[in-house]
Length: 64
Image (cartoon, rainbow, N blue to C red):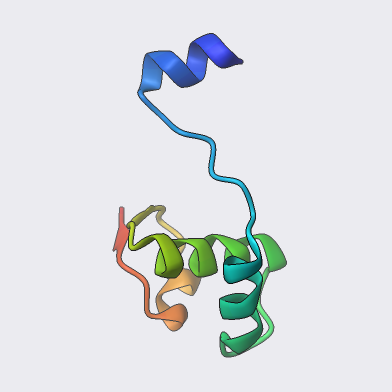
């Protein structure tokens, strides 16, 4: 897995307390994994690459 991550130029993003704080403030009761991705996106100021329009309710930048 480390090689695949390196080949993609990706970084593993750990779940931090700051992410959980933002998660608790998000609207709705959608998929828990999607909600954590949205919280991480907001805290880290990064876009989410996804076709899932449900993520739009969280006010994140979504690239499809």
